[in-house]
Structures are given as C-alpha cells and as structure tokens.
Image 1 (cartoon, rainbow, N blue to C red):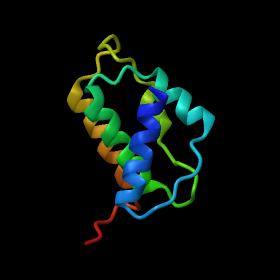
Image 2: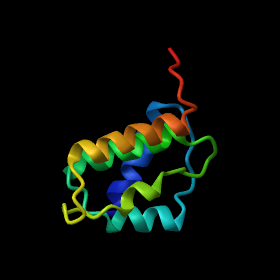
Image 3: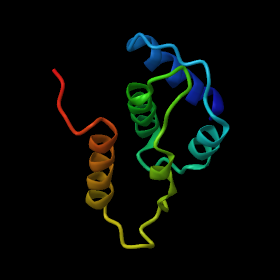
Image 4: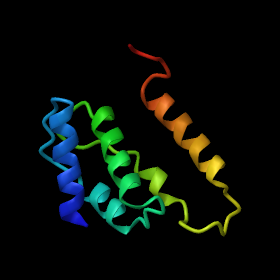
Length: 99
C-alpha cells in the first residue's frame, strides 16, 4: 500500500508540476489504515486532491476525512459523506472557482 500511495503522489505531483518530497507519517498511516471503500480509484482521487491542496513540498491531506467508519454503522449515507467532502474541499480552497 505504501508503494502505491507514493506512486500516486509522484504521478499527481508530476502532472501538476509540483514537487512533493515528504509525506507526513500521520498522513501515510491514516491512508494505509483506511479501508478505501471506493477501491484504488478512491485512493488515487484522494491523493490527486491532496496534491492540488498542497502548497509546500510536504503532502497536505485532509486526514480528518479518513476517520469515518468504512461501514454504515453510524448511519452515514454515501450522499452524506460526499456532501461533507465537497464542503471540506470548498473550505480548504477558499470556496471559489478559478478557471
């Protein structure tokens, strides 16, 4: 899993012309522990979004998103999680659209 995460980080960084040289231990640990219910595509999309949000050479990741249980034991629906994800991205990006 670690190699896959590192691969996606380097791939996305190259596509966005960013240089990411560090993945914080807490971030790596959370990403490795997460169940990734959307499979490998969800992991890749999460990493791509992290690269976009990163302003330094260290990967900046909204690891608080990875604290939700992978099952539906708390009554969260996919729509609830997606809604929160969109709000989080808007908040982190300043809420504006840039063309």
